[in-house]
Image (cartoon, rainbow, N blue to C red; front, top):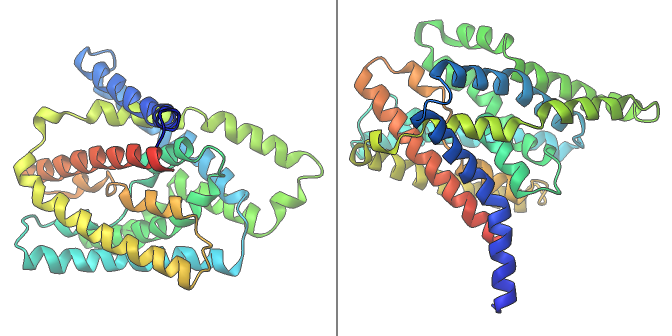
Length: 311
């Protein structure tokens, strides 16, 4: 590689990855300098999850191209998420990895609070719909099987009740209705679709920065239980690496490359859903899960930086 090519690669990495790490650093600074309170961060998360992210999702699903292959993609991802959970239970028991909720750290992806922001930075010329179609499968898995098993006595009813009031799910449903029915395209000549795009883009604009700021605020390296979380992180990496290989093979052989390979890869490097610590009964297990999520988030961002260098 020549000096000029190396400089171009470095600039590309800095353009893509530096804003991410800088915003994370600002989030950590906000915590250490008490520029934002814990309540303030909770409010920012609420804005991201309930307002800006739904705008991203509505736009992504409304503008998606719907074909027989695109319908199959979420089913494949759903099946792989279920397989990851099964592998999590089996391997955690065989390898004596502690933690009642450890298997749940082996499946699901934090696409909402991290994935969409990273995808927009990494693939600036690609529509969010390329990532949304792979996310749909894991969203369906998390809102049904995942949360039903975690909810215990509430079961599927509790999970469905929670899903019904989720702005994220309603944004996906609305986007699917506009996109799959052809309504979005039908409204294009009248200019209504353009107005919807302008509104969605404006509301969605701060999503990446707000989410990364809140993630940075919650990252406290000194509190991470490095030794205790090593086995969990290692097991997650092995399972996700194997299933990513399966997903890329299925995409190539059976879906004719219909899935954006970068979107698929990005999905599988993401950490598990951030909601998991809520379901931990013991404080010690909650701390271990939070540590694992922090390490997996840092690992995701490092792999993201590598992807920025090679793409």
